[in-house]
Image 1 (tube, rainbow, N blue to C red):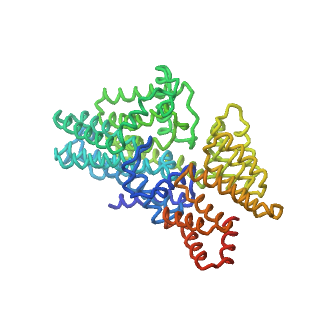
Image 2: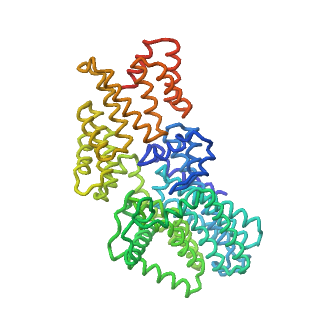
Image 3: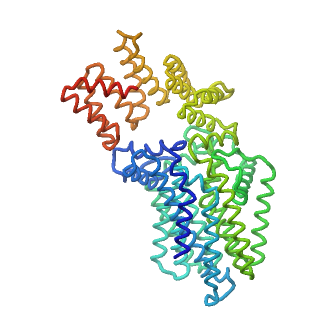
Length: 586
């Protein structure tokens, strides 16, 4: 219990700084998904999407009910989930060390409890301090891996009970946790391989393995029914590169083998030597990764020949847990590599040194080696964690490590705009806007951010020009329409446009409406349309839109402002109405 408390305490302390990191990358997009939903939270279980993660969205909705738009609360939830996972890894390592005779080589009565606890604890420290986890914990959107791993470990612990005692209720519980994992992230499907390979290595009776496999297949059927499996099948089987297809074009057998080797080698390297980490890694091209994979295979063979079945199993765990993420290498997703994909595979890696050291006769030597491994992890962790101080710091680091990434430059430019570093931001964004061979939607994002920059600096004409460019590059960029509407709203306040207010406000309403049509759940355009109609004296229209804001998200600050304006409209307090409108337009 003391060691378990230390595990929880260390897990919390090492990540406490990320509570102040704010929202990063697409955190806000993930956050607004449950906010946009006007239906029951359970509606998340009945949606068709490439990424079907209802438990993730429910957790975000719960956080929103507790913290609103304060990112600190969301970060705290991630840290708590990591603490729970660390505790589960401690329990898992302890159970494997104590109860599997293939590991200790001793009768259970002869198992040294102190050695088992100490090695389990040190393995857990490797898990806690491994720097590849920082992305999953410090990035709110990384919660999906935290949840999936939590349920996969619970499912595996339940499966271990089934393997040892044959209790059917343990298998049923394992399957319940398994479907919870699938509802958290698709890569939880790897649990099938993790569990069945474990059963095969421990020579479970074939009947028990078959029953377990059938139960897991039943879970998959239920999962596919919930997530509209035909939608997923259509995406996976669509011709590579075609519209709506999951896989990108130009995938040949040679490309598949090459990417699998490079991707696997890259991930193994980051588990063993977790340095030079990046939010958006460059695609690996070095032939050295081929030798990394060969070395991994050789170690697996040596473990097999020497009868080290559990050590072999943990190496296999890494690849099994990683395999769903390797498919992303062939997808149309723009960022095919990510440290977050190593969160579940790292469980096998973290347990490996503790299990391996259990066979070392000299307890002191085993502890020294394990402590050295923990120190290496802690050092790499200490070097990486400062990069996650804020959105600005992580994107600055990413651009340095991957200067060719368009997404990195766009997000770095956006972070610079938010920090008020307009000159630096403009330089970054112009590289994308004027870059050769850039996709239209990338240019659109860059021009939208340049327009935002000009808007923030008060250059309304420059903002209008860039935002029009943005819409020309991508007519479905709702943010550009919204920002252009704000430009026209602010233009209507200028002395030089006296007499043109109604025309400019009308143009603002048109662009707000377009932004609203493109992003139906985005309530800011709805609120601003209400403000615009209020300025024009169209009170009935204004009341309609303010009421809609309240209906969509009654707990938001915008809903509070809408309710206040409705009260003022009904009270006929024009002076306070004008004061509130002026403050909002600024």
